[in-house]
Structure formats: structure tokens, C-alpha cells
Image 1 (tube, each protein chain N blue to C red):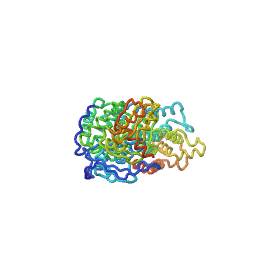
Image 2 (image 1 turned 90 degrees about the vertical axis):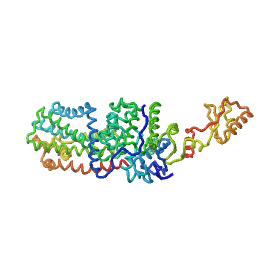
Image 3 (image 1 turned 180 degrees about the vertical axis):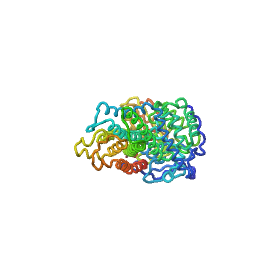
Image 4 (image 1 turned 120 degrees about the vertical axis):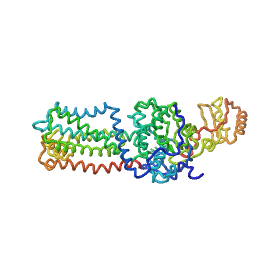
Length: 280
Length: 312
Ligand SMILES: Nc1ncnc2c1ncn2[C@@H]1O[C@H](COP(=O)(O)OP(=O)(O)OP(=O)(O)O)[C@@H](O)[C@H]1O
Ligand SMILES: [Mg+2]
């Protein structure tokens, strides 16, 4: 122990004061929080790779082992890949929730909140990092999809629109994840949420068509936000869609925007309120 | 004493969690440049009080000023003047010690270069330079706590809050943290430290407030507290445990009996008188004593006494 002498505390070193700089500090703090996540990836490359490989394995498993979706006729790969891209985005909810509950549990967030930083940056940094990770995840999945013979046929603009819809869904999942993390408070609760997310994911048209299901289940599936995104994305990629002719199916693109926007409109304020209420 | 000499002022603090009244009218003042110990059993309200003083939690009622600034209305200004060491180590376990300190430095708005320099300085000061690049999860408990303490000093705080800084550490880790705290006090920092260990309060604190059920039940220096509660004590260790009851009857006031140690002990007002009278009384009664001692109460006894009184 070489702790010797602490310099006299005449003035705090911090240079936070001055309201004109508030906004620029908010950006700087958000960037610091984002870099924190990037540093996590750099220190744990194995975990990052495992995170990327998991959805790829799901894709290959459904693509080759199971080899066909319930009720899907023709080229299954062209149906499956957009479905799996959608599912990967939905599972992002767990990733967000897990990181945030761990931070809350360990008290790191308390330390952040005791500092003169912009506290909203905690949420902004998390959002940016999770969205970046999802972009990388999407790129990998699209690459693997292309490698197993999946193609997009409608040109670049439609391709980008499809990617945009996928990321929009991920963004909605992000805010649901943030909210649930603060409700749950501890990492153990994430498992409980997993139990809910998985049926949600499979009660969609990601890997099976609603037409192959009992009528009531088919209706639930068609209105599932994930189904809207999957159908819209299939259409934008020019892939086989196998959606029915119900209102939800024929207006999938509208719903693929409306659902995430609605979810964000609900969960963004809830998450922000929860975050503020950490001081209650 | 003018208000400017007070680093912390707490008045009538109340906080209720659902149906649990954690703080029930807590009052406290801490002079600048001193170490204030907050001593209390589990659930006394120590963490709740620290969280309110360090802007993490809002009180239901009452006023708190830290460095002359109201924590409720001007939280950001308070935050740039305080350091907090929470009850649980609040560092990013996946990152290295240096990465943690640099990140916190940036969030204190030191800018990249100064944050890096401050990180190196603190690693050096706390003897962590060699392990600075290792992930925190590979640190020992004592090292982790030291890094945590280093993180709370980044901005050279005027007021430092330490919530049970040594709970869960082995004696070596405890000594390390104690030394670090002592070296801070020389620099003029005001320290508020909560603890369940009387020894820790005795070692580090200038002033001690004993709290129980969200209220201060006694206050003063360690010496004052010892005097306040029953004053000096006399211990008589008997040769024959069978004479315990008879010996107890000879001592004044309420007598503690300890069969295992063959000891009776009582609080006294005058050391010399008590000693001579006890010796004479024992001789007259034909009771043989192995040892007779007059001493100050330990803080443990003070603490037991105070919390017992409170419960009654
Ligand atoms: N978030 C909470 N929700 C409900 N009750 C709480 C909460 N935090 C603390 N309490 C209760 O309030 C009381 C005071 O708790 P506090 O953590 O302040 O005590 P403490 O003195 O720090 O105890 P310890 O020595 O165990 O750390 C306890 O009875 C505790 O159970
Ligand atoms: Mg506590």
C-alpha cells in the first residue's frame, strides 16, 4: 500500500459548470458510455462471437436439420432467412435487459448517478451500443444467409428499407428491455422474461405460416408485431411471403412501422420514468 | 461555529419504503475536515442516509446540505463536490482498473488526457499500478475496494461518503482501507463513514453518531460515548464459579454475570472508592478473587447498552 498523501482539496477538479456546455457534455457523456460497451467487446471477444454464432446456429438448424417450415411451400430458405433476421432482433430484448440488470445489481449505475454527468447518457449509451451490436449481428446473419443460397431481389433501396424495419423492431425491443430491466432490478429476473419472449418469437410467422395453424392461433400470429416485420421484410427483399389475405397480412408494411412506433411510444416514457424513480 | 464550517447538515430526515420507516427524524451536523462515524446495526438506516446525502435517493421530509448546498434542489453541484463509496463495490468488473478510473474521470468531465493522467496517479497512490490492466473480476476483495475508493476520489471531493468500507474484507484488506482513509483526512477532506464495527469508528472517527431505527440515539467522541453510558466498570474474576451470585450481590447497581469467564462486572462512578470497597467486601464475605480490574467500557458495551436502552 503506497497511499501517501492526498492533495489538498481546495477546488474540485471537475469542470462541469456552465449551462451553455450542458448539451455538449450530454454528447460527450453518451459517447463515453458507448465506449464503455465497445471496451467490453474488446475485452471479451469470445462472448461477442458466441452472441453472433447463436442466431447463425438457429438459422442453420432450421435451414438444414428441419429443412422446411410448417405450411411453407417452395424455397424454404427464402422464407426462413427474413424470419430469422426478425427473430434475432426480437431476442435483442434479452441482451439489453441482461446488461442493464447487471449494471443495476452491481451498483455501477449508482456510481454514475452520484457523479455530475448527464444521467440520460446512461440510457443513450446503452441504446447506441445495443443498436451497433444489432447492426453487426444483422450483417453476419445476412452474410450467412447469402452463403446458404438466400437472395434479395428488389434492389438496394428496398434492401435498406428492410434493414431499417428490422432495426426499428430492435429499437422497440431495446426500450422494452430497458423498462423491464428496471422493473426487475436483478439479473435473475431475466430468465422469467426469456420464458415469455420465446413463445412470443415462435408465435409469429418467423418459421411457420399462420395458414398452417388453427384459426384462433393464426389470428394471434398475424397480429404479432414480429410477424408484421417478418412479412414486410420478406416483401421488401422480394422473398416468398406466404402471408394470408387478412388485413394484418396485407398491411404488413404499415404495421411493421406502426407496431414498433407504438411500443416505443409506450415503453420510452415508462423506461425514462423508471430511471428517474431510481431515486425514490 | 459558523455554518461555513459545516460540511454536512442534516435536519429531520425521514424516509419510508412502502411500510418500513427507514429514517425517522435523523439530525446530524459534521464539521469540515473531520471524520464522522455513523454506527448502527443492520437495518438502522445507514445506507438510506448515505444515499440521500449523496443525491441517489430523495427524502420524504427534512433538509440536507452538503458543502453548504441543498442536495434536493442543486444535486448536480453537490455531485461535483462529493465522492461515494457505496456498500457494494460499484465498478465495472469486466474492465480493468485503469479503464474504470479513466471512464469515471471522463464522466467527471476531466477530458481524455487529464482523465488518463488522474487514473495513473490514483493507481499509483493506491498501490494498484501493477494490476492496472487486469480486469477487476480478477482482483482480490481488498484490491477491488481500494480501486472503488480510488474511483470515489477522482474529482478530489470535498466530502467523501464511505458506506461500510471494510465490511467483508479480511484484516489485511481492512488495514489497507483504513490507511487509505487516514491519508485522506490529512488532506482536508471531510469523511462520513458508516460502520457496524465499533473498532473502526474508534480508530477512524473524530465524532461518532450511534443510530438505531433511523434516529441518532447518542453522539460524541468515542471517549464521550464511553463516559456517557455508565462510565467506568469494575470486573471481578472469581476463583470459584459457585460464588458468582454472592459476589454479584456485593457489587453496586446492575451487575452483568458471565459464568463462562467466572466474571461479575458492574458500572461504577468512582474508580478508587469502588476498588477499595469491592476488595474489602469480598474479603469480609470470604470470596476469593483471581483478578480485579477497573476499566473504561468498550465501545461494544456502549453500543449494546444504547441499543438495549432504546428497545426497552
Ligand atoms: N429499497 C428498499 N425497499 C424496502 N425497504 C428497504 C429498502 N432499502 C432498505 N430498506 C429497509 O429500510 C431499513 C434501513 O435500511 P438501510 O439499508 O438503510 O440500513 P443499514 O443501516 O444500511 O443496514 P445494513 O447494515 O444492513 O447495511 C431496513 O429495515 C431495510 O430493510
Ligand atoms: Mg447499509
